[in-house]
Length: 114
Length: 112
Image (tube, rainbow over all chains, first blue to last red; front, side, top):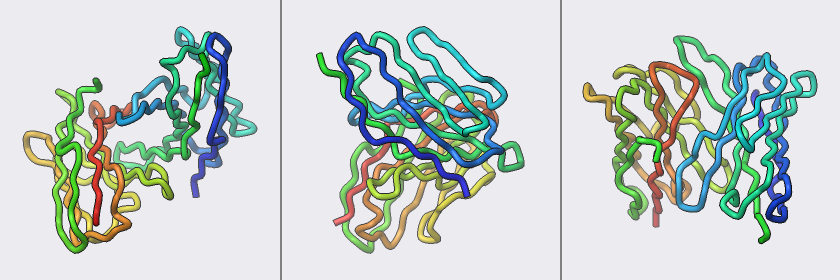
């Protein structure tokens, strides 16, 4: 079955880069995502990458995908205190009838030290 | 703000009771998804509806059911509640059956 693994905690200093890593097992994943969850809030879709891409950049966010190793990473440049949150990696697989089913990791809590 | 709304924000109830959680998708979105987030299980997909019809089922218990109405809002019904059902319940919506899902703020259910 599908499984998505992430480390639980990451601590960085303000202004440094953060790198959050994720591994997944389902080789038929179509898209891979990064969601952000701030305390008391829902999940915010940050970015996603199609499975045939290696890299995607969106302002301070860079997503790298190594499909051979089933490894996904999210790099946040110039990390700010407002980036403190839980970051979820997720994969989607097409489950037929036009449906994409998401499988989430347990989330990485990013703490930014001022 | 994703545009997805959920009510109520918090719900406290007793074991054995039944509750209904409500979700309104973003304007124009036809698909609604329900997820459960708990400390031990993480975020788990429960069920998806598309334009009123059930499209996909995940780890949804038989005590739980959902429906999507003609105005596209959805309700998740949880019955015979157990302590272990205490969790955050999220609704998400997407345009058609697009892979991009946008999440609501969640309903925190506490079963005592």
